[in-house]
Length: 324
Ligand code: FPP
Ligand code: MG
Image (cartoon, rainbow, N blue to C red; front, side):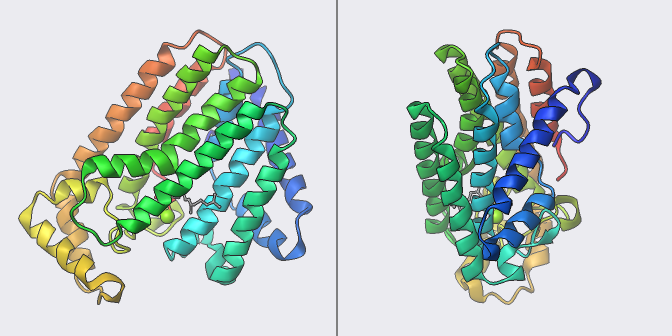
């Protein structure tokens, strides 16, 4: 994400390098079958948003626990496991600009790689002393799966509320980002009120981030390094489409598409996407993402000062404006 750290934050580069080295070292210790796909996914890039947020937020306190990098690596591993599984569910062909694990190998291997990475992450997490961190991780993961399950259970359903959409993205994305912001601070013994503030910041940022992600699905794939225009075609209603459904023509077209389910012919795809883009719903969804960003920045600005606070705010603003 932060491709180039501003000059005054160059010292954080050592942490980022150490994080990447730690991940690489951990992955070299995995079984042969899973090692290549995991290392390929690591090297394909990725913005490392979750571990970076954890590292930056941990600096809200003057204490320096050497467990911060461990939890940061665990958070990235959990994220990697979840996207490997997600790409199987979504039949996605591209991730981080490279062919997905299930596409390169097969879905069975991809599920095993995801399971391996997930359980390995939890094994690494046992190195952390603080039991409350284990509890926070466990609840976050339960919510993550609940969010993904709710998404699957409402697949090809046209009559869904915006409230329901918010609930799903809160669980599958925002809670994990909130946890990333909270746990680094917790490890460095920041006061509980500050941990809560950071969790709130992460929650609002996560909501803004997922809405932006859903908006980027309407853009071209070469921008994002993943498949585009697949949410709707795979039967998932995200905010832009949900808002566009107030237009009768769009509603009827989406209704027809969802009725065909996975057996659809594909001929009307371009037209529906075009209609949604023309409807003003993209701009409206952007405004909602922006609203959440403003809430995140408001909480962020109210944090007590620490040297990395401006970087945190800058990163949040950058994430909301991202094009990939
Ligand atoms: C990406 O969403 C996916 C997630 C945010 C979570 C996926 C979670 C699971 C599959 C269950 C958890 C599994 C484990 C092993 C922890 P998206 O499809 O909206 O975004 P995308 O455009 O990046 O695919
Ligand atoms: Mg997906």
